[in-house]
Length: 98
Image (cartoon, rainbow, N blue to C red; front, side, top):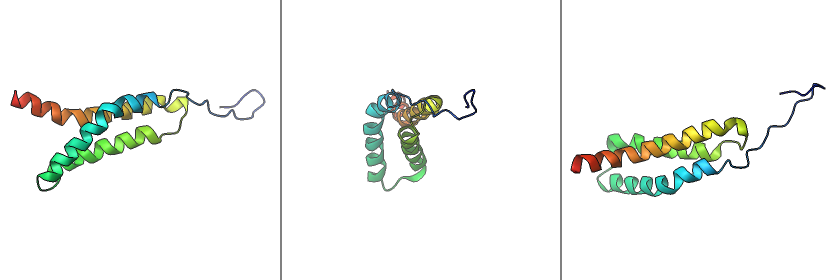
């Protein structure tokens, strides 16, 4: 964006950039580590390895994005998607075993 004199304005920093990744990471990362350990103990990642790697990449994206207000939505979506990808396999196992 530019101001009336034609000079570009610096990007507005987001003071609460860390909230969405933290809220998703607190339950998600321990669960992701548990899933990884279970999958590795059963002779390799197999077809479920993609879900673990996708969730890890989304958590990394949520934390690594620049701290600007314009990227807040993308940060929240990445953190939420990472949490969903992490929790979904566990939720399905619990529902099937109940």
